[in-house]
Length: 292
Image (cartoon, rainbow, N blue to C red; front, top):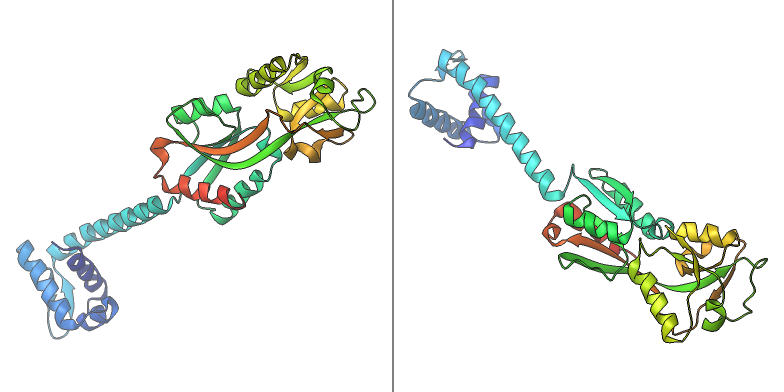
């Protein structure tokens, strides 16, 4: 039994007129008649009573009409659902972001994706890089906007931005001159991102200082870069911060670090390898790439 025949039957059952039904269905009257006759032959019963004056449903036809309408509704629902799945429509995309991303232009790209794809719900959570790696692996988030290098081998990451680090301090509490040197920087109490949230960043800074025969005197381990800015503004130390946070560093003196700085903040979009062909996820990633 063909779906086309069921659709033609449902139109005729509503119109009860072969001419009107044929015009509405976009077929000739002879095609309609042939399809209805084949359907009746298949069912072994007449569906319509035909006369020169009227067309009426038989009792069998009335029963078949009710079932046919249910079939067509389910087919239409299945078609819409399949098209929605193919386009990612109706999906929930869960995105993890770090505190540094909160004040970057990447948030504007997320907002732009929301605006252009209102059919996809976007949920944003603030998580550190280590936490995002775990959440991507467990399926708790779909996309992570985090800072490489990453430990997990089953993640696919694409760099979006790259930022140099700066020294930021309150001029009422510290004075390291007009040009920062590592000896001057490491002689100060430092505010840096906590080792718990970014162990590789932390260890890289410690190792770099030791390699130069110096010691990184980290007195404040901030849980976010935003917290590090606040600590520096309070005069608790010299903060080493990514360049993208400059707009927040009001009241602070900001100096570039020497050219051999081991710190560079890479920001990447990462997904689990099993999501590589997810239509909604790839659409969101494409939006994040804009302007990269």
